[in-house]
Structure formats: structure tokens, C-alpha cells
Image (cartoon, rainbow, N blue to C red; front, side):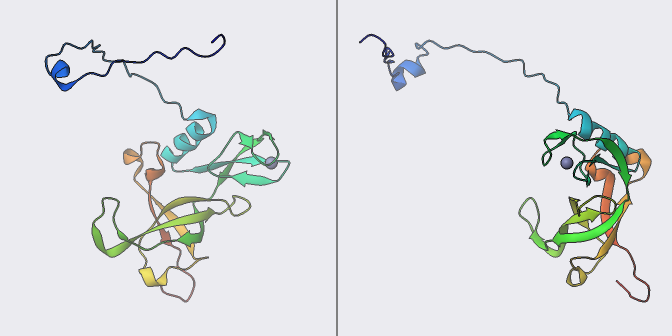
Amino acid sequence: MKGEPKIVRGTPLDRATVKKKQGFAVVYTPKLRYAWDTGKAISRYLAELKRGRLIARRCRKCDRVMIPPRMFCERCFRPTDDWVYVKDTGRVNSFSLCYVSWDVRRLKRPEIPAVIEIDGALPGMGILHVLKGVQPKRVRIGMRVKAVWKPSSRRTGSITDIAYWVPLPLRGSKV
Ligand SMILES: [Zn+2]
């Protein structure tokens, strides 16, 4: 009928045809070379990590300081305004005690992934990272923490340039 798509039925191949390689086949090795761009905001963020610094973006309209940085404010629907260095200290927003590793091994001592609200990022913006140097039972929401950086010679421009986060000792208390 006019206007309707024409249906072309294929011909199924039986096993014998496939085995004898009588079917039509195309062998093609695609060239899968590509470049991956992290974008303007994350490129700067990663470059600063390599230097041992944390950088964020400020939106003057909603007065937020965003980390990881982005060039566009998803609240105000406008470009963000300024680069802002923030501290490598913060507080634990949330955490988990993981007794299973990424490759599904049982762990005696848990890994402690945590969302850390970075000092200077607003309001309470944070990044996901990992805590060490603390007894699992002592981890608390609100706990003050500080980044432990890899030596500069081993940094690659990655979030793993921060090796992990450790509790900041409070006066008169032991962690
Ligand atoms: Zn905004």
C-alpha cells in the first residue's frame, strides 16, 4: 500500500551454510581511535589536582561554590562566574563500611568510601572519596577530615592524586 514501509524479509542461514562459509559476510575492523575531552571545568579541576589544589566554580546568582566545578549552573540556567580555590579539608557527609572489595573479595577491615563536604564549597558540596587512618567504629557524620596527597611526582591529574582522607585530630580527643 502506498505510504506504508516496505517489509523485506531476510533469509535465515542454516548451520550447514554457515559452516561452509557460503553465506555472505563482511569482515571489517573499525578504526576506533578517538580522543576523550574532559571539558573546560573538569580539565582545570584535574590540572589543579596534579598541583595539589582543589578548585571549584562559583555562581554569583545563587551564591554557590561548586565542586567538582562546572561551567554552567543547573539551578540558574546560566554560565558560572569565577574559579575559586577551596581547602583540602572538610567534613564527612555520609559514609559506608564496605566489607566487600570492588572485585568481590571479603575484607576483614572495611574500605570506607565517604562523601566529603569540602571547606569553602557551598552549600555543603562534596566529592566522593575514601577514608583511612580511622577505626571503622569511630567514623561519624560531621567528622572533620583532611586530604592526604600523593607525592607530586606520582600525581597524574586524577582524583586519585588525593590518596585518601584522614580525620583531623580534635583538641583533647584521640581518633
Ligand atoms: Zn546559580
